[in-house]
View 1 (tube, rainbow, N blue to C red):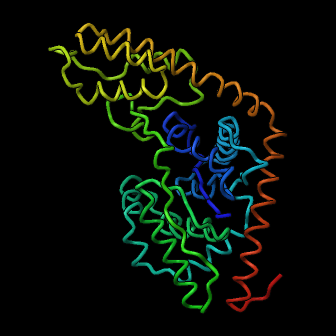
View 2 (view 1 turned 135 degrees about the horizontal axis):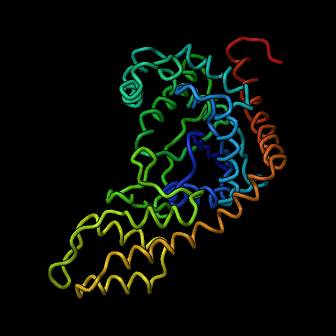
View 3 (view 1 turned 90 degrees about the vertical axis):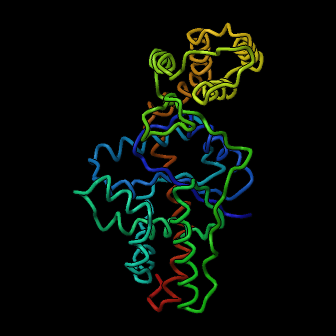
Length: 329
């Protein structure tokens, strides 16, 4: 069975874009692959979070993952910092990675522009830590977005270079894994084509119904159709795309007909959309609250995941140490 690895930085709550775009696919994948899902708290250190934020965010993300359907009996779900083997492999990979290569990584340049007063070494070597996350489990597939493709190429380069230097075939070259038909792109409420944290256009899984209703009612619209059956402007098409994801088919068709005969009232459509979003999120929220209020359960799940992840990583590190020439413990 092929091994799949994916991580999420604990820098905020999951939103509907995460849920439809990746997490539901993860839920399906856990029955088809040997899956490792981790909360990347070491990666978050590039922005200097407080200790309290690290711990609380990790628990929050874990509760949300579980509420969305990830099963710790089916997949390995762990917190990155609970697997110290990652850092040892990170060191070895850094020894074979060159400054020029890291300096050309687009995500580093973007982050350096965003935080010019905090361009730290961890930010610079982010790709090799990501490579260590992947290669310690000898993962063959990694679900990624477009922004991570260059980092994935660095991970493949790390695997190839280690294999070439030490004349081994220890590391497979991990491949980008796209969800294809299983993932759904949720439009942003600002009229853009994608919901994202950095754009401030999200509905979070933790949002209360009154917050959801307020956000949806502020969704961007225009003046409305001028002639029957006219094409929908992009901001309106995005609103309909959102409704197609969360609403019943007959609801979508009803408002589509209203658009085509020029009788659509955006306020009515957004009120219905808000209630449909609430209906989708509320059962997830109930499960989130169940997990979030049971800290012992979360700690036990994280501990179980860490044990399985460490077993996998330790097996790889024993091979790495032997290949390089270090004592094997």
